[in-house]
Length: 342
Image 1 (cartoon, rainbow, N blue to C red):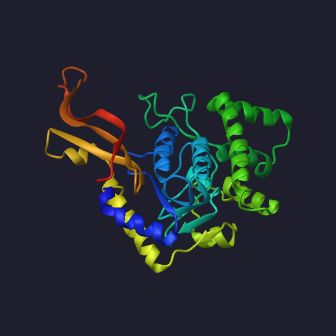
Image 2 (image 1 turned 135 degrees about the vertical axis):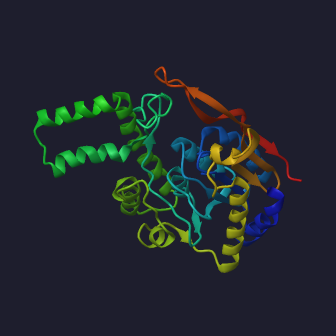
Image 3 (image 1 turned 45 degrees about the vertical axis):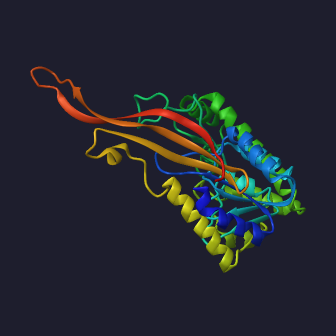
């Protein structure tokens, strides 16, 4: 909880000569969260509590999320400060990396990682996930770079140049992926390159350097799972990276260890394991945090009950039904709540 780490926060503020804002989108398996537009209003509450400052440090942990929300958050924070830095205790990927491109300084621990910013499209028109054929709501995310790689493979490796053959390739993929999704992919790719260029232009003036960074983060890294540690971020990409000294590193690590424990990030949310010998268990899971010293905590919660029951699966007569134990997850609440600093 905030009261357990508020002294850590104050020490970070002291060492960085800044005001600290904390944003954690948890990646606990089964309860993953992302950067999303709804957090903007909560950020305003915290920024109003901080007020106009010379410098704001954002402690950020995320696997990514909504691209335009990341862009909006950076621009919002910069309205409240002259100097904006991001402190990365561990993972800061995808849309999180995009946010870092707008920072004057990026403070990275030894284990901190950035990642490519090539977006994935995930909407109702996406292909059905074959692992869940009976659940139409489970779709397959479509990676921008995967589609681009498909066409480059056809043209460069297979050396297909004939217009008729290329047309057939386009028709084939449009039969697998809805044409409107393909249109969104093209638009998203152009959009994220534009946003990255705008953010980087605020701290870098070398246009060639900016283009190289964007090219690497959008496609040249080869995979969305590629991880970028601080030496590569500083020496090869040329980002403004700062290494914390040992005292600051210990404070950042202790802070994040406490957050990991609170959000239970290292333990998958598996209803079958959680309920075990019980027939019903009520649960509350904390999934994401927005915190600051003076304002308090906005926490994203899931609350519900796990209920175990026996399901009879009919068979062809004269075989008796098969009994199977299943666990229902009945959510009673899912959303943000505010907790004032005690």
